[in-house]
Length: 113
Image (cartoon, rainbow, N blue to C red; front, side, top):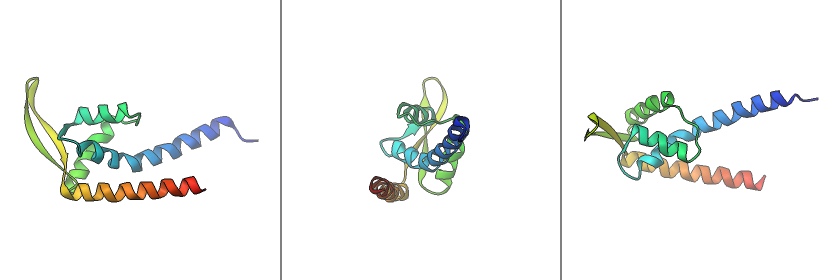
C-alpha cells in the first residue's frame, strides 16, 4: 500500500524540478514587455501563480545577464538610490521563442499521451 505522504512528497519534488526549469523562460517573458525592476518581476511571477523566492531570482537574473539573454539599465528612483531595470536582449528574444516552441511541443506530446 502506498503512503499518501510519500506521494505528496515525491509530487512536490517533481513539481519543484519542473518549475526550476520553467522559471528562466518566464523571467524572459516578463522582461520582454518592457524594462522591469526585480521586485516587479517577482510580483508578476507570483501573480501568475508561479512560486518564487527572492533568493532564487537574483542569481537567475545574474546568470541570464552573464549569458547575454538580459541586459540592464539604471533608472533614478523617487524612493531612494537608482534601480536596476532588466530587459531582454535580441539573443534572449531568440532563446525565448525557441523555448516557447519546445514547450508547445512538450505540451502536445503530453496531450497525445
